[in-house]
Length: 194
Image: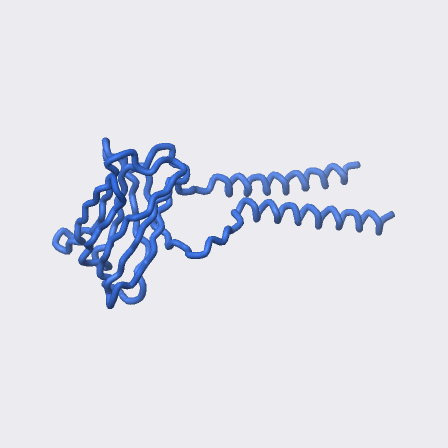
C-alpha cells in the first residue's frame, strides 16, 4: 500500500510541474498593438516601408504612434503618407544631438479602434548599412497626456497567410501525447506483471 501512495505523490508532483510550466506560458507577454511593415527597395540604398497598425487587444483606440529610426542606420526620412484623418511629423536622425530620427503619426479622428486595423502609412529613407533594413522600435502614445501606453518592435508583413499553432496548443498536444503514451505503458506493465 505504501508504494502505491509514493507513485501517486510522484505523479502528482509531475503534474504540478506541468501546471507550473503551463502557467508560465500563459503569462508570457504579448503585444496588444502590432505594427507590420512591407519593405520595398526603391533603388540603391533607398527603401520604402509601408506600415499597417493592428489594435489586437488594447482596450483603447490607437490615436498616436511613433516609429524610431536609428541614428547610424537611417538618413533622409521623407515622403510620409498617412490615411485620411491622420497627420504625421518627421524628425531626421541628428548626429549633432546625437539622436535617432522618428516619425510621429496622430489621429485627427477616432484612431484605430480595438479589434481593427489600418494601413496606408509609408515613408521613404536611405539605409546606411549593408544588407536589408529591418524592424524599428515603436511607441503607442496617449495623445492628451503624452504617456507611452505600449512599446514594441515592428514586424515584417508576410505575404502568405499561414496560421501557426500557438505555443499553448502545441504544449496541450504534447501533454495529450505524453498522457496517452504513459497510459499505454502502464497497461503493458500491468499485463506483464499479471
